[in-house]
Amino acid sequence: MRRIFRREQVLTIPNLLSTARLLMIPLIVWLYCFKGNYYAASFVILLSGATDAADGIIARKFNMVSDFGKILDPIADKLTQAAIIVSLAFRYKLMLAVIIIFILKEIIISVLGLKTIIRTDTVNSSEWHGKLNTIALYVVFLILILFPDINTGLANALICFNIILIIISLILYARRFSGILKKKP
Image 1 (cartoon, rainbow, N blue to C red):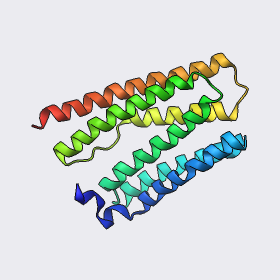
Image 2 (image 1 turned 90 degrees about the horizontal axis):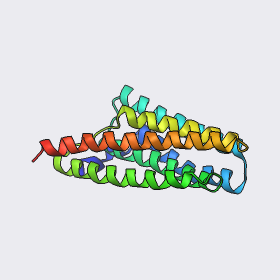
Image 3 (image 1 turned 120 degrees about the vertical axis):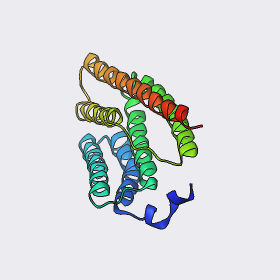
Image 4 (image 1 turned 30 degrees about the vertical axis):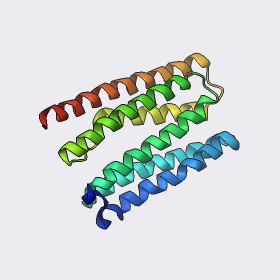
């Protein structure tokens, strides 16, 4: 576990970009919830998404992939998503279901992921369904933020779509980690 926190593992451009995403979270919440500036909140969300894409590209292209980054990046993603989900829950009641399912998914996957790290001494990267889930969440977030007067039925349909994707991703990650754990004694 110590090798994850070596200086060369922590101080990288991709990890600095992930840290910048963490610092954007209070700004997103403040702009959306307290200022009601939906365009500015959307811009910061898009900027956060751009830094997420950039950190992955830079990490792979310049061989800066690190175990620490494999942990920090999803933490930045999940905290950003959680902050936006909670913020949207004040306007869209069905987001409360998203909060519950999102939290359950993250707890289950975190426990299984930690067990996998401990047992295999390997940090696994995200998979396609996790990335698809993230993209879909952000698209729906932006639609709900940029169009606050959206039809309730359409808003609920978009939110249900996200719920389905979160559940699918949970199932697929749980299968993946369970398979790894079954192989390693």
